[in-house]
Length: 289
Image 1 (cartoon, rainbow, N blue to C red):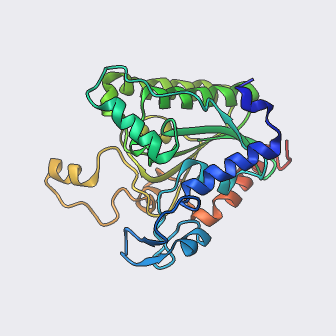
Image 2: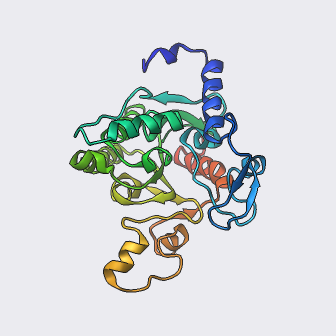
């Protein structure tokens, strides 16, 4: 048993999940009702953004979205079951001001950490899903590394396919070497999962960079990405300053990565659930588990 919430009726658990998803989408709190696109600068009503799954109705820019909202877009209704919801971040180095920033991020987002892990069903096929860029830019702390590792191990133990949605700025600087250790920890967990024949689908969203790209995010059996997502280790500006050359247009964007073999398919947000259903059904021989 994960915790007392496992005793909740399915309807109550689903209602709590949907409320969290609406909070992530800004539909519960008194937030501004017009949202400006960060790419084209045009403004549109929040209701219009909601209908388009937070893809700009003018230019197609895929806005980063919260973890619960993202899961609500792909999971079958009533199937969400959160894992390790009470796993809190730790100020392992007593980094100055870190505790206060964690509290502020938790208060602002309603999250305990940057990762949301769960089991659920997508088109009738069991799966495990996960990461939220609103919390410390989705950076990988010891708690995030532990949650992802536990999710991987849960998928292995239950013989479930694994799906990880990545959105991260990399390792969390406030936790120093302990954060960097999560790269090896999560990568080793993926290797053990793969050795048992597990299917791992990695979905890269904007942005996926740093230590997350250099570890579990790049190890998928199938690599999917949302349109226009920045995917890489160092950012384009840092690379240009290092090599002293101008980078080609679209460098490190998901379309560029697909052209160069790093990503298997770029999938618009409104097609992602159907794409995952097809892949998962192929994995189980076209039959629902």
